[in-house]
Length: 140
Image (cartoon, rainbow, N blue to C red):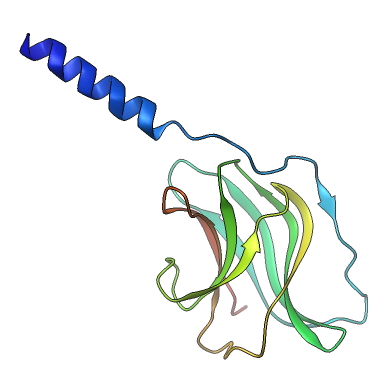
């Protein structure tokens, strides 16, 4: 009987952790003005169990700062968001919105003028399960 309880608990845990992959998969190629001024760049690295590749750049586009994900690709997941963060973990961050697609070149406007000497990381984060997929250090 005790083993049956453990098997049922294990099954419930596995079922509860099943993640739906609902981020769009069609590649996006947003145009970035060739005159855009790139202030900092970084390359994505993945967390255990996920795959994130590509570059993150802070660019000045049409007089406003934006985060550009270039040659970007990530594993899929539910509720993926793009953050500009002070740390390599999502503790003190600015949410730039939902990830538009798991691949391509994507542009995310940044509100205001954050202190980029403090906001040094671009993150791909699953809000639903509080799970970090990958980060890029913006300082190269």
